[in-house]
Length: 270
Ligand code: F6R
Image (tube, rainbow, N blue to C red):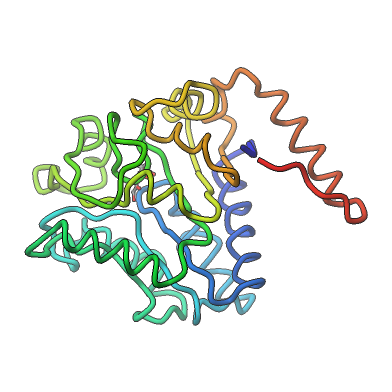
C-alpha cells in the first residue's frame, strides 16, 4: 500500500486530481470508477477536475465512468440519488459522453439482473483502470457494509444505521433516504487495476487505521484493499491521526519521491 498524508482536504483534492489527470493524459479512453459523498466533492466540481477541464483542456471525451453505488427506489432525477449527484458535481461540467457514463439502476424491476448487467458492462469496457473510493467511518467501501463478503460482487445491500445517519445531514428529509442500495462488491472493486482511497477528517481516522494496519476482516470491508497490489490511501492529517506507523509512511513517501525524481530508478511497489 502507498500511504500519502497531505496537510488538509484541499491538498488531498489537488493530489487526487493530478493522479486522475495523469491517467487521462496517458490513456484518454481510460475507465474510471467513481464514488459519491462529501469526500470527493473538492476533487470534482468545487475544485480540481472541472477546473482542469475548463482551464487546462483536460478532456473526458473518451473517458468511460462507472459509479460505485446507487440507492434503491430513487428516481435518477431525485436530488439525493447518486445519479443526480454525479451529474451535478462532475458530468454536467466536463465533456464526458453520456453514453460512456454508467450508474446502477436502483429502480430496475429485477435489481440483481441490473447488477449482473453492470458487472458485464465493466468487463466489456475492459475493466476499471482507476477505482476512486471514499470510506465510511465503519470501514465500508461503496455500500459494502461491515460483514460484506470480501469476494462479493455487485448486488443489493441493506445499509447500516450509522451509514443512514452519516448520509442524513446531506438531505433535507432523512426519512426520504432509502435503507437499501445497489453497490459494486468488494470483489468487483478489487478487480480494478488500481485503487485510490480518499479520507478526510478525524471521524475517518479509526477506519483508516483498521484498513491499513488492522487484520483483513469482513467487519472492515476496506481492509480487503490490503490484498490489492496497487492501492493508494490518500488522507489528510486528521484521517491519518490514528496510524501507528505514521512517520514510516511519510519517510516511505519521501523516499519514493526522491526515487521518482532520480533517473529511471523504479519506484517501490505497493
Ligand atoms: C458513496 C460511497 C461511500 C462513501 C462513504 C463516505 O458512493 O461509495 O462508500 O464514499 O460513505 O462518504 P463521505 O465521503 O460522505 O464521508
